[in-house]
Length: 169
Image 1 (cartoon, one colour):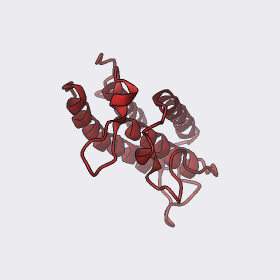
Image 2 (cartoon, rainbow, N blue to C red):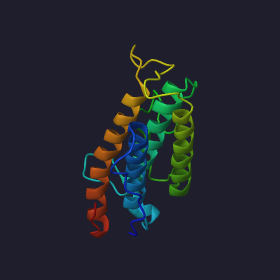
Image 3 (cartoon, rainbow, N blue to C red):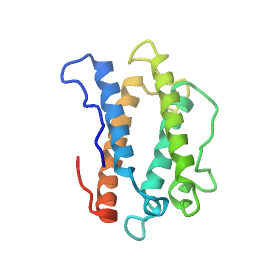
Image 4 (cartoon, one colour):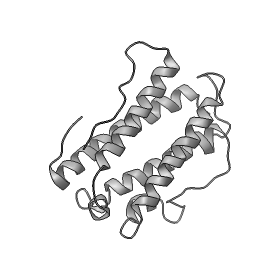
């Protein structure tokens, strides 16, 4: 793995810091997947879990879409890899899934997320679409996304070590 991540600034404004930490964690997930074959990306973590690195990438594409496009921007979009009939599809349906497609979709959703975030005047901007009756601020979403990536990057670190012994931050 070649670590090309950009470290977040040590002194910056709140929004710049949140953006930088979110991008750092996005880059971390990509780094944990770097150089692996599709078969390796599909390997399940530990039975009975259906989690895999490919599943995490697909999951994060859906999470990016859900928070930034569906809720913050109010776009009427469904899930990419999951549905009401298949709520864990992003994890469960990786056996024949294309890694190239999943990574392209994830990167596309990140670009949409950046545009939705940039369109907000400030961190107090609220979601246009409620989740379970509640609206959320952009600040909350960005902090939640950092938490979501950090948690899953811990999973990714363990999966990567299991696959080929590679470890790192």
